Amino acid sequence: MVEWRALVRFAAVYAATATAGLAIMMPVSYGWFTSAPQKVDLMVRSVPLAMESGAMVAVICAAAVVSIGSSRAAWYAVAVALLGILVNHVGMSGVGMDSLTTVNYVDALCAGVIIGCLAPVVWRPSLAGGAYLFGCLSSVIFGDLAQPPDEDRWSSTLDRVFGGAPPVWLILVALALVAANLPARSHVRPMPGEGPDFSLAPILSGAVAVFTLARASRWLAESGDRVVVVVSGVALVIVGAFLAALILPGRDGVLLLLLFAFCAAASAVVTVPRPGWANLLIDVAVAAGLLVAWLRPRPYVAIAASAVLAAVAALLALTGVANAAWAVLGVVAVSLVGGGNLGSALPRRATSAVVALSVLFVPSAAVALRGRPFGRIGYSPHWYRLPQVPHEPVPAYAALGITAGCALGIYLLRRWRPEQSAPVGPVAVETGEVHGDA
Image 1 (tube, rainbow, N blue to C red):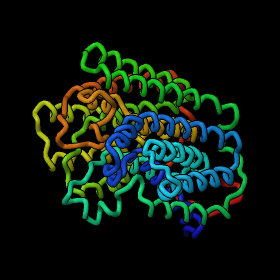
Image 2 (cartoon, rainbow, N blue to C red):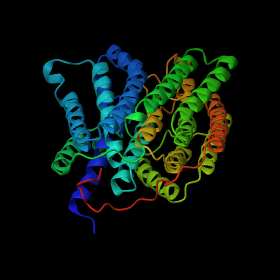
Image 3 (cartoon, rainbow, N blue to C red):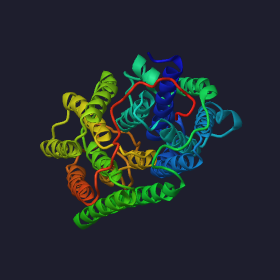
């Protein structure tokens, strides 16, 4: 029987990670478009840099928590970060702070602290570990697929509930649950196989992955109208992903390569225009894909699914088919494949998992190529996916190339490095013990 403390911990982990994911992936609140155009434009231009900063903060915080070995410190850091996001959304206007760029950076940095600090204290076969993965991925996909509502849809209940970046009610719920969980925390040792000796490897790997992807994306957004630039950018992403995977111990880098491929493919898929109710399918599909892959991990099947996503996206772009039915199928496919990729190669070390998850927060090469017409990274000048923005096949071609390169990298990594003992197993409900457990 699950004790109430385990349930509170599960809810706290999910609410905190969902809040963090939305804080990074939904930089623009629907209501902010009423602000001065130059403020909105400056904020949108800074979104990629804020995302990169949040991703690196997550990696550094995960390494720090593992080195310190204190779950108490990690939980208090999460509480402080959530409080920072809350103040950022409800208190900045009271002190005269109306810079949307500053608000965006504060959200991203605090979100990075949450994602990085939570991973080491829940990274084991447990209900809380599943909540962490589900909360991260579902919120990231929800934010990435966001489309601004039109005048008719803005008054709908769904948009009022989920509108925001993230909504204040979710921040309050997460903060209350984390606060309720704090008294049960105790000092614990790092999980087996981790410690100070492993602290520098994930930071270096994360720096290589984030910097390479960010630099390639900026290059493609600025000069991606030339074939040589597209080919070189794709090659740079593949090489950076493989080097980052090699830096991680054992086969921990397989998940990093899977998520590199998935991010590129997912960004090329048609998901607009779609009805608002289709957003409810994201959680269902992510949970289904994550659970199936966690129980029966198949890395090659997962990366093949990403390749299929990219191939279908290219075909739809060439044929010019884009309607609500295909958009709904696109949302379900991205969510299902995302869950499958995340659950197919979970690393033994929490720090390696955070490095892989950090890739989700950095705009991919496909996003950069979709921003070529207006000269910056993004799906549109307003960042969100807009139906009227032309859907071209080049981002999908780039995603296919990245997927093929990552598949080769997975093959080489698994061939060169022996299989690790004591792999991560399926979800198991926690016993509720707090002394000596993370």
